[in-house]
Length: 195
Image 1 (tube, rainbow, N blue to C red):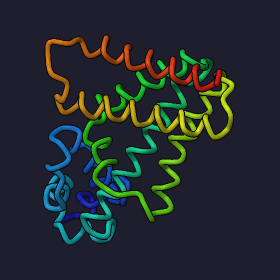
Image 2 (cartoon, rainbow, N blue to C red):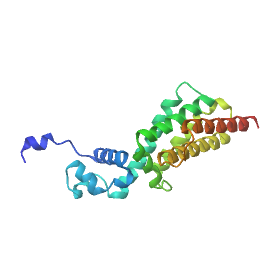
Image 3 (cartoon, rainbow, N blue to C red):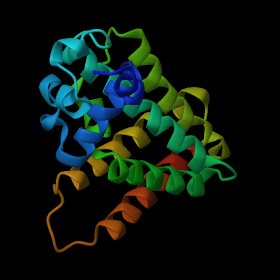
Image 4 (tube, helix red, strand yellow):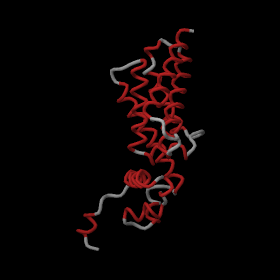
């Protein structure tokens, strides 16, 4: 191999390895991601990956973290300039779109447990906090705001997960169903605020 060939290769680092794994996951599903497959996509030997990730579990953990960070970014963008019901609707739409755009990456958030991992727990908390900040317009108590944010996370995640896996039987219109879920959740949050 000449110096020119070496210079033409992209610089390999952990970020590139994770990005490659994420691309495979999005295109073919998370089960298609293996160290062998990632190495092949990068044009390197599998042992060379260990300079950048500590095995498959570490790769999955990194994908999980990236998926949660993507959700936080999308939720923050969606919540700019809106509050209350409008914020809930915008964030729900952003969550669904994130799953459509990056299905394998978001799937990784379910595959690697966050309990006991400070960085992953912080990433989950960032999602809940972002959802909670958009609920300020409801005038909830601090503890009710946390509960409402967790409820939103569960509703959005559950719906998008089922939608991505064809878990909603036809002939129902999924957009209409999601709008009904958002309406139900918003009514519940308003009732909580009034109690």
